[in-house]
Image (cartoon, rainbow, N blue to C red; front, top):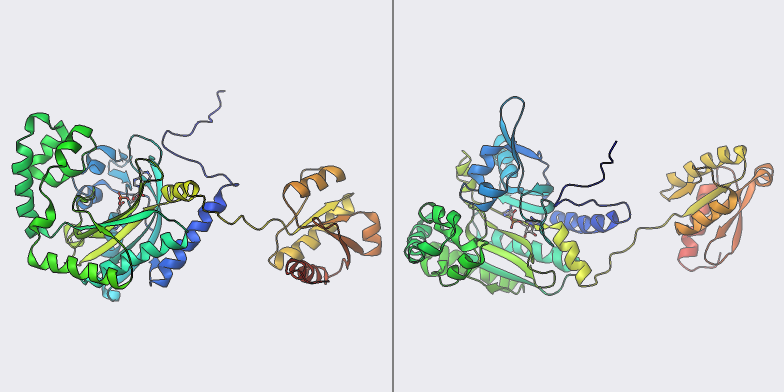
Length: 431
Ligand code: HAM
């Protein structure tokens, strides 16, 4: 039978030797989200296709070209989530979370699926850390969210990541802006790609994030949204910037940022780096005041952001940020003979109950090979358990670095004494 050993294009495995890197960044993200008052939400990996079509927007690349959509055996059309915002909004509505008090603050880790052309930093299955906040129209919330994203990136040790912000207004300013875009792009009708042509009438703003290089060039001369903002949107943007200034967050206003998803209103932002190639946006987000209504709920102004975990790890690599290695094995018990193996089990259990990592041989190696293995896994201490040790009910625990040996009784005090030994040793005290 042929071996099945190839993963699907655009997907990645995280192997046991690499997972500590993910756990490290996820821990920091969890801690920061919690410091800002967010609590985790977990939603299904697939949803009704309609949710994304309405939420993310029919004319977006994500919905038009990139979704993994299929019919279930029951004949329902479902889609693997291409992003986390729509599912979280659906859950907020379904469980009427607004009744529990506003604002609602939810954070998440999700795997996302987009049928894009894979390249460095662009995958078909990727992972996001995100936060969403519902029920506030205050620019203070916009600024606070940006601060949270900045805090995460700072704590991860990333440098050379710039923050670009923009306002893409409300439906009122957008109507005027859309007309200006239609007028502009109509001059280039014969040069636009077919997708853009189809978007020209329905949603001309989507022409601004077309991935075709020719269209991108044309888009460079297009009118900018900031010239069309209404008074309220303008004031909201000014106030957001004031809060950012007060928090000491540096940013650039980039009027060409429109984001690739339809739900955004007012503030949008991206954190971008040049150190990982063309896919340098590590975080993107903004306000989406109309989404909850679009999905059938009441008016509930909301906002959020998401960061790509793979991209964050790429930046950390590119910038040489060191991720602390996991603690190695504290104690390796090498055994000689069946009785020793049995005794090892009770000692290991004691040690592990003290919260320390401990291992023994479970593959049937001889003593020398066991010691070699202990060395390979970087065990801090080892202990050889044979007939003598069992007969005398004591054994020498050996510090694998210094070679120093300490005799410990093999009774119920073993783990506690070993704990003290390993802790004091680590702190550099004389034992
Ligand atoms: P997005 O900009 O589509 O926004 O994705 C957010 C982040 O996910 C990107 O900045 C990038 O780091 C990562 N990402 C996106 N596509 C890929 C891919 N194909 N491969 C690897 N990483 C990728 C959203 O998804 C919005 N839901 C963000 C949001 C939350 N807005 C409001 N709330």
